[in-house]
Length: 345
Image 1: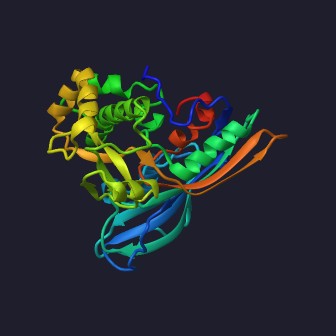
Image 2: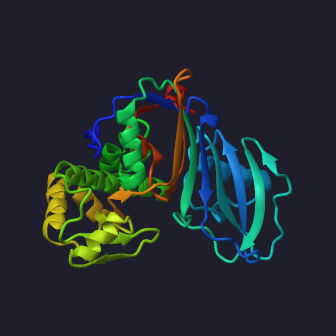
Image 3: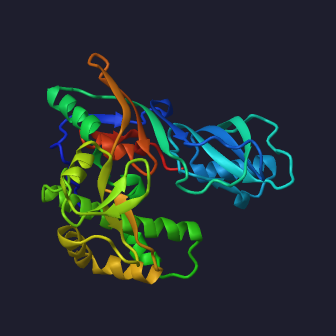
């Protein structure tokens, strides 16, 4: 069982269910750029239901006689949901093999050529439309928590999806990662679970120390809408940029490489790493490279409505790629994934 996380705007007493029906959870991937219309790579805009992204790739490969290894994606999208995402097919000198717009569990909505293939994390954001059910006692404190998320962002925890349906990916990673015959996909998933767990514990500790909402001397900062990072003295100008949501403090995704962190932020990370020597040793053997992730995530265009008679809360919002809507929900709801009640496929 993973440790309980802390949230900056207090406990969330209101319960809710999401994914009661696939159409209750809609996700739309936003590339952030327009494909050029020419090149070796065919981008397809696909709507799917009841399929994970790897299952979608396998189905498209089988339906259209394309090597699955030549199909790339930017983000992994939920299975028990209605999602729209981009895939790229490497087809040098070939016409499009996608003649039909519909397959079992998916529809191809658009096709366009591009010069480069999609790579993981290359899209800019995701747009969500959520319907949460069994929501009772939706009071002023919950509305204030939603407003806090809208105005100041939320703790950028990795969501439970990163840790497996049984929340046991950290344990499995420690058991499996030194085996030689793991697939590249499986190895990457398990390494990510270990790094995500360490990051979540650093973030939890910063909230516990009440130094999440305010930057610390020695912090590393990331520009909003960018992966660019920098360190600088904590002066009035930097604090103003932080309050204006232009920059956010970062923490490490564990790996080798020189860190820009210093002073208390570095000490907090070293404390967490020292508490998890088995995970650190495992990641050292995997030769993971140091990366940085912002400690807070910011929403765009967050809007909501509540129907007290039906007990339904509807939300619309956009999140930057890599942030989890389930982590956002946990700031004001005890939200249960109803799809877990269904038999596993």
